[in-house]
Image 1 (spheres, rainbow, N blue to C red):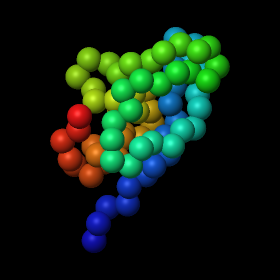
Image 2: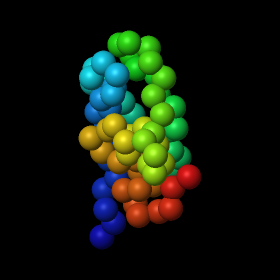
Image 3: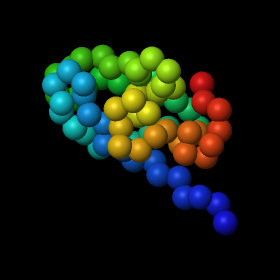
Image 4: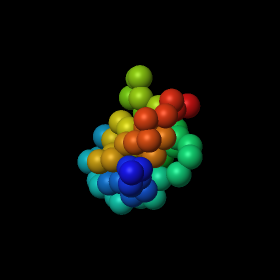
Length: 70
C-alpha cells in the first residue's frame, strides 16, 4: 500500500512568525518563499532542501516519498 502524500503545509515565517497554509509542488523543491505578511524572502536552513522542510509543518513531497531531493 502506498503512502499518502500531503500537498499542503503551514509555513511559518522565521522573521515575523506569520503562518500561511500553502500548496507544495508535487515533484520539486521550493527553494524560495516570500512571506505573505512581511514580504521577507525566505530560504531553507543549511542542510534542508526547501523552505517546507525548514519552516513547514509537512516536509516536501519528494522527502515524504523517501526520494532524494534537489
